[in-house]
Length: 465
Image 1 (cartoon, one colour):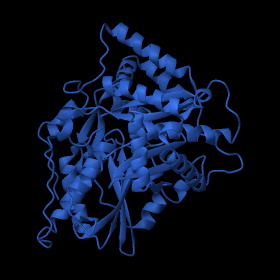
Image 2 (tube, one colour):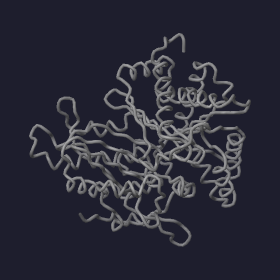
Image 3 (cartoon, helix red, strand yellow):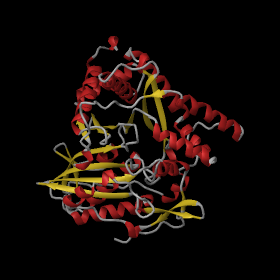
Image 4 (cartoon, helix red, strand yellow):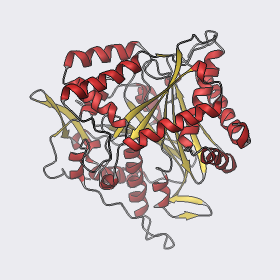
């Protein structure tokens, strides 16, 4: 299929955050994330390849490489670099793409591989975080599923052809714009803005954030040698409903409950290695979408900021108080779109090259967050809501959708990353641990501890929280 270059869009300058993502990448810690879809039935490869190409036409930033124009990096339309999904599992298992950096100077920002076992196909799409976030990836997958399904609309009269959402590629020009977004914009001169950002940055850097401790008796088996190291579990509808009721009782969100319980599990995990020191703190980095209503028609892009939720371990003894404090902080984050502060800090630092380079060097030497938690909420429901179903099973053309999994990138010293989502009234948990320090068995153990903590929260009476 021939891909059509969007009129007048490229070359497109990178945003400050996109440049930061590239600067933060290293050979051992690629800034890539992946999304997996598991399908049951006889998948037709030609149709899925066509669907990927057509989706790339609708999400052009995923079909670009990066090139310097003068001294400024730009996205360059590069459809000739796209590669078909790798269906030979021996090939991609040997290559281990999930553990390799993806050079955007010579590659586009997406690749895919698949494995077929009996009548089940698992397709993995890996995205470079510079050109896409989790919401953008879900939009891309939604298009693939809908386009593939259209090939079978005439064969299954009871199914209606899934409708594609309207997209406008020209909106990619506005992905870094403040227009149309409710954001926290610092007023005053550039010196005042830089002073405020520096104040909060130094306050954050003064905290002693500890990484998840590796147990000395167990060494990492480098799960990336075998597979992605992703462990998933689905909570029951009853448990999920109870967790949402707990959040509602405290005027909090499910995300607040997940962050609270993740902090408690991380603290307990580290306590098994040794008692914490007085300044030890647990930090959970949560990506914060900065999209506004006008962004519904924007193709896949990276439109997020970062929020660092940090608590001293000695002040985490009462789980109810911890939840309320996180709730209050996140309410302020949402009220002022405080994730924008991180982008403004990066933008300000990039105006002073030596300071940014110093920050990047320091950030790779110290733990910036104990864990990452990306809660997608109902974002992936947009996929299933556009597809027909039969006997309770979501249909993607001639195959059934069994599961969707995803996970964010791993950074140095941030040894555990999680992605959570809601589908069909159930909470789906995905965990991946740093394969350089933790074995796949330890990843399963961490998942078990997190699930037990969530089940405990779901079963506790409202008055005992």
